[in-house]
Length: 65
Image (tube, rainbow, N blue to C red):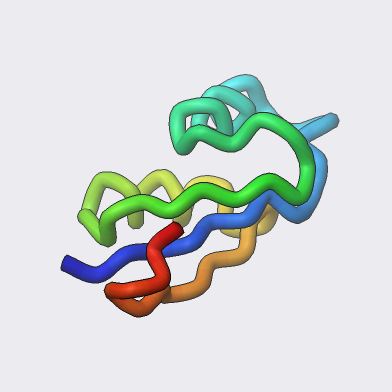
């Protein structure tokens, strides 16, 4: 399965509460932190909701760390 590297690039100050909770549920805590998640429709939906706050890159199978 494909993996996505999600990086928290812009602060959520001033954003709605549900967008802040979405950032937390993805697993992002501090600005410029990154997580690797499976490419599923659920994760894609969360990314879409906060697409203005994060950047997304596809990760090759071997470099998922």
